[in-house]
Length: 392
Length: 146
Ligand SMILES: [Zn+2]
Image (cartoon, rainbow over the protein chains, first blue to last red):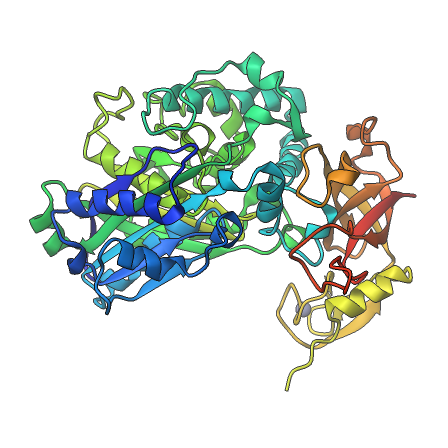
C-alpha cells in the first residue's frame, strides 16, 4: 500500500442555499483544487456523495455533470456514492483505497446535498427511506424516532434515569452550538442553553427539536493523492493513516443497538490499519445527528467505556481543552448536515485542525496531531471511520 | 437456482391472517424473523418455515410527533422495539394505547404481534395501484397489549 495524503480541501457555507447541488459542489471542489495548486485536468477520478438529488431537484446522474462542470476531462470516470448520511466518507474511503492501491494518483472526493429544497415532510420521508422499508419503514419510523428508541434503551441498560440522560444530551447540543457559533461556515451560529434544549418542541419523544440536527444545503470536497505528489502540491499534507467501514443490519436485527456493532467493527479496522489506539486521538468529528448519537458514538469509538460517555460530557471532557475534543466545528448539530456532503465537511475540519488553521476562529485544538472522522448512515447501516495524521 | 422461501409478500399475507411466520434453523437452532435468505445467526440456508407464537416484550419506544410525508394523518403515533419470545426483535406500531398518555411503564409489557395497512398516501415504496395509491401489500407490524 502506498502512503496517501490529503492536499487541498474546500467547503461551502452550510445553511439554506439558492444554488443547485452541482453549483455548490463546484464551489467546494474548486476551492480544494486551487488549494492543491493543481488543475482540474490533473484529477483522474471523481467520487461524489449525494443521497436525494432525485427528490430534491429531480436530478439524477449528478456525478458526470459535476465532473464536467468543474472541467474534468472527458475521459475521467465519475461515480455517485450513496450511503445515506455517510456518503461522502464512503467516497473519501474509496478514494484512499484507489490511491493506496496504486490505481490512481489524484482523486477528487466529496459530496453535495440540497435538503431544504424538499420541505420538512418530504425530507422526513426521504430520510425514513434509509430505514428498512418492508418490515420497518411503514411504521412511520423517522430518524429522530430511531435515536429516541436508542435513548430509552441506553437509559434502561445503564440505569441512568431518562431525565438525567436528557440533561446530559442537552449538554452535547450546548457544547456543539458553542463551537459552531465560532464557525463562519456553520448553519446556526448561536449559543444555546440546557434550558432551551429541554423546553423545545417534541419531535420524537424523548428527543426535542434541539436534540436534532437540522436539514441543510451544502457541499464539501477534498483532494486525495499520493504522499509524493501531496508534498509537491501543498506545504502541509495531511496523511490518511487508516480507514474502516462497516455494514449494519436493519434496526430490528440489531441485538443491542446501544453497541452499534458496525461502528465498533469499522473503528477497529481503522485503528489497526493506522497502528494507533483511541487514546492517541487528539480531536474527532463525530456523527452527532442527534445528541444521544454523539454519546453512543464516543463509546463505540473507544474514547469512553460503555455507559460512561454522558457523564464525561457533563464533566466537560469532550469540550475543546478537554480530554478528547469532539466536534470543534459545531458538528452536524450546529454546523448543519447536508447528508451527501457531511463526511467531507468532517474531513475538512480535521485536516484544518491538524494544519493548525483555526487559531483565529478560536476553536483550534492545540497541538492536534491525529484526528478522526466518524460518519453514520441510516440506523447504522453504514459506519465509516477515517484517521488523519500530520506524520505518515 | 435459489428460491426465497418466505418473501415479504407471503410473510405479510400470513400476518394479515393473524400468523407471524419466520424460520427455525436446522443447523444452529436459531429463529429468524422477519425472513431473510439464510439464518440470521449462522447464515445456513437449511431452515424451515415455522409459525411463531406471535408474542413479544416491549424493549423501547418513541412517540413520533413530526412524521414523514404520507403519515400526517396518523400523528402522533408510537413506534416500539419489541423482542419476540423466540428471540428476534421487531419494530412496530404500538396500537390501542393513547400516545399522549403512554409512559415508560410500557417497557417490559407483553404484546401480541399484528399488522395494519400502510397509510394510503405514502409514496415511493412498493407497488402502486391504478388509483396511484399503495396497494394493500404494504403493511406495518403492530403491537397490541396482551
Ligand atoms: Zn443458523
